[in-house]
Figure (cartoon, rainbow, N blue to C red):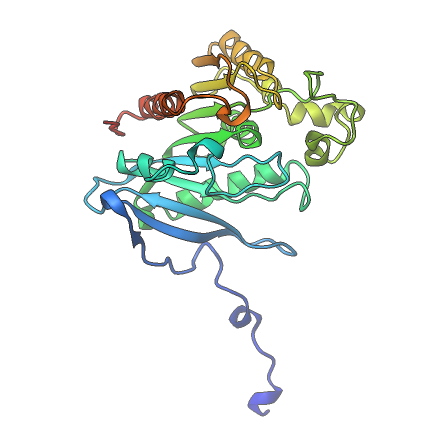
Length: 301
C-alpha cells in the first residue's frame, strides 16, 4: 500500500490532549511574577478548548505554592477570564499579579457561557480545571490541595457552588463578591418567573418552572457542615444582584456551623461602582488576607 493510501492516524491530527500537552515557558513579569497564558485544561467534543491563565510567584518561591482559582463574572453569558471587574482593570500591577507576588498562584479560568451550554456545564468546567491543576501541579509548582476559589458576580455564584460541591481535591476556602445565591426566590431585580433573565438562560429553564433545577443551581440550597470557610462581600446599593443574596448565603453557612464572614459595603453598587479607590483597595486587601488564613503557608505582606 502506498503512503498516500494509508489513512492518517487521528491522534496525529488532533492537538495534544491537555493532560499531556507540553507546557509553554513562563513569561517573566514585574516583581518576579511569571505568567503562563492560554493553557488548555479541557478538550470537549463540539466545543472550543477551555483554557486558563496561570500567574506564578517568582522562581525562588518555596513550592509547591497555594492556589487561587478565579472565576469571572458577566451574567454567565459574557466575560473574560483575566477580568476581576471594572474597578481593577486599570491596576498596575493587576490583581492577579499582586496575589502572585504575595506568594500564591492564580489560575483564571474559562468556562462555557450560557450561549454555549446550560447548567451544570459551567460547574463541570470548573471541576475539570481543578482536576487538571491537581494532575499537573507537580510540573507547575502549585498545590491544588490548598485552593481558595474566588469569584465575582456570576463567577461568585459558580465559586460558591464549587466550594460547596465536595470537590476532589477539596477546597480550602471561598471568596465571593456580590454573587447570586438563590434562584428560587424573587429578589429585585431577579424574578424567578421571568424567562428573559440571565439566570433563566444559564439554567436552561425558567427557574420557577423547574424548581428542582433552580435549587440545584442555588448555593444557599447546597450548604452543608463540611463546607470550607467563606468570605462574602456585597454592595449595599447593588442594583443588579440584591445584597439579600449574600446575607442569605452567609446566614445559611453560619447556621450550619461553617466559618462565614459577611460584609455589606454601604453605598456600593455592583462591581464596586461608586466606591473610592481606597475602599476598593481595602476590599481586595481583606479578600487576599482572608484567603491567606485558609492556608497558613501563604504569606501576605
